[in-house]
Length: 121
Image (cartoon, rainbow, N blue to C red; front, side, top):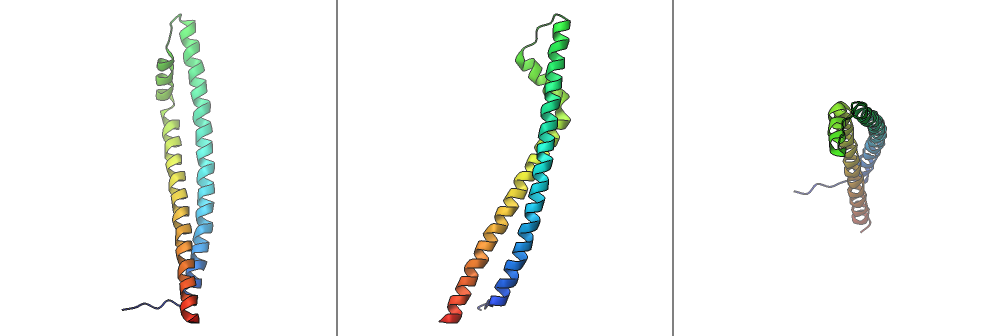
């Protein structure tokens, strides 16, 4: 059994993929914006907590190690870190989706070339 592909089918597929690619890029742009907002929020909160932890330790005459400051900061900013990690995962998924669509476009173009050649000869 052989499925014959027509130029019109290839054209429709490329048109559909073009629309999917546009949507994918919009989603990726939004995801990257959210990622940068989450990253900025995490970095600012982390800096605030590091400063506060060091200041509190200094006021009480207690010495804290860099590791202790980092660990407490991480615990104090866990919600921001979770948001950052989640948005990063979404960005990676959106990038993979855009790459998948681009691969499908390349495949459709190859099929289109094959269809044209078979119609010529």
